[in-house]
Length: 165
Length: 155
Image (cartoon, rainbow over the protein chains, first blue to last red):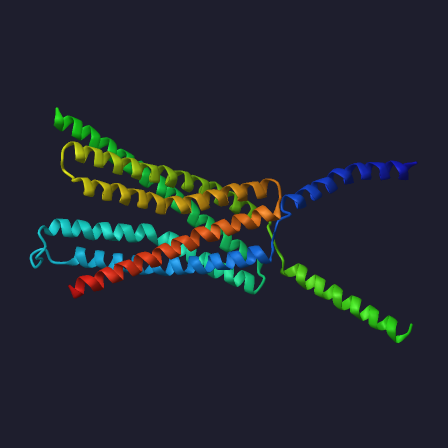
């Protein structure tokens, strides 16, 4: 009798657990098969190319900015030394802003290649995580940029109307 | 047990080993990657919407500038046509990656919500297309810049 009771209790407990495990497995039933693998590797190659080009642009912007800021205003033949300094600071800011997506794309490319080469799940996950970081950063940046454009257009219209009147 | 039975058993063992190895090599999407892919799809959708709006704004602002310029006789007829064509080209360049990114987001969200390998593969393909397009565009722009610089130096 007791054995039957224990058995029925166990089966009652076991059923939901099994169902839960089955549901959890079904949720992540997607695999990175050969098609996805080849596409992801090509994505990694393009990401690597874009990141290298981005790093070059970051480097050029940064050093141009440093030179523009460090240049002596007296020796400058530029129309306005202050505007040259301002342009330099602008270049440094641009370099700082575009550094992270380049870095994240590069990390994604490296991690993805290593992940597939060694069949390393950790590396693969880290690669996807970096790509997500790049997407999120670009998304936030795009929204900020559009917001700034809207504000600038709004003020331009207001100024135009005010000057017309 | 004769020699044939032993051979069959060895073959089975080999097959089991091969199956185990191949199973280990398949990368499954675990909870961590699942969440990251979901977030990527979310941000991808946002970016694509913003870029679509931005491309519409480019065409709209280009047309408005031309209309105002023609009204105040700043631009001539050919100049205004060129301005409109340029704004349409700029918008067209932006629309394709936004479309690919939007497709990636939709398919990835669908594939993750109701597990579907085909949709997942298609989403990855759209993401690849987005990055490939960006890379090709960058190469074209670089080539154009270099050619322009060389022409400018020669002239």
